[in-house]
Amino acid sequence: MTGEPGDLAARPPIARTAPASGLWRRDRGSLVLSSGEASQIHGRGYYGSVQSGGSLQLDPFETLYLVETERLTLRDRRGRDVDFPSLLRMVHGRRRGGDLRYLVYRDLRQRGYVVRLASGPLDFAVLPRGGSWPKTPSRYWVRCLSERSRVRLSDLVSWTEQATSARKTLLLAVIDEESDLTYYRIGWVRPRGSWARRPQGGPYPALFLGDRITVLDTKGVSELTAQGFYGCAVGRRLELSLLEALYLLEEGILELRDGARGQGVPLEDFRKRAQRVERDLFQRLPVYRHLRASGLIPKTGFKYGTHFRAYERDPEATHARYLIHTVAPEESLSWPEVSRGVRLAQGVRKEFFLAWTPVDGTPRYLQLERIRP
Image (tube, rainbow, N blue to C red; front, side, top):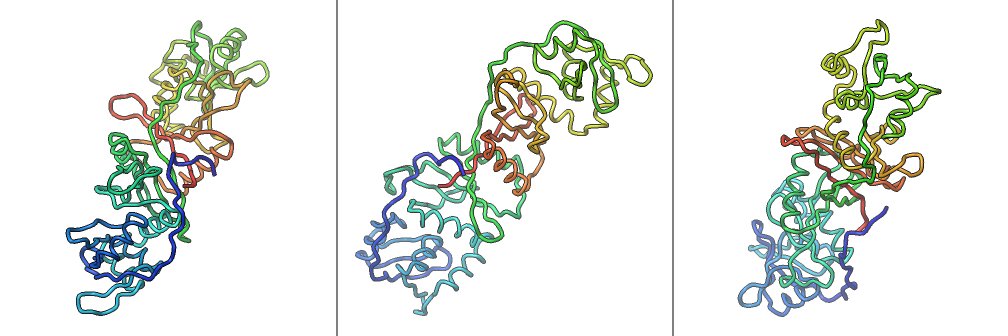
């Protein structure tokens, strides 16, 4: 795995002491009444919120963790012992997915981080290095998700917007079927390259061969290769994808003829015929245009299971830096497919982006990076 989540701080292990005593309140977590015990727990990990009179209010996840690690024993209002299995059942029943959230809370605490419940759709807030609660504001927000759940693009956008506006870093904690955790850092990016040339000249004759376009004109092959590394050279001809051809047609660089009948193919006719072959063509086209306008050279990402791989400059002299997968604004994604994309990108030293085009017409990009906190 690559990357580190900024300056999250690991703290030294806590010395084992006699467990404190607490009162379990089903609706609010637990309360440590003894001011001495409350001070001891709060001072060794910033657990809970100190109340007037010196007692300590613990949320359900803090309570679970302290009971599991034998630092807290509980009784209910009737004086009955409350053990860890009973607590876990109550937390699960009180809030759907509470047991999954506890796995994330426990993992972060085991790593030595100070973790607090967050408000709204996010689950936890994590303090930066050297931070102490409540003096230091949180810097990292965590959202907990099951591997089996699908995540809507609109939710990813909303969570990232909230984190960005609050100047937080968003981490997604995904729990798999074996209760193992994978963390993803997610944030806005705008990929840029240094290839500033725009297509010009022509129009060069090209043949429409059903699911691809062939340029046989010698000058056209030379110019399209030199100007933007369009297509793939096969012998003396140039093979273009439907997407590349549509972009070049809109720029007035190609003159298209039907490969079977030899008749000219108007732009609108080509649009309809191309979309029948590639249903997501117009989902990908705005992103392709934007990448080109941003100085990048986009090529097919088929070998990597994505829509595009993008080069910052000459593809014959450099490796692609980005792998980009386009999604529709209303689309939902499964975590196995997200995991494959991110893991593959990082395995070949590339950055993985989700790209989509909102109603204003300007594509946006979310980067997902797998990290080990």
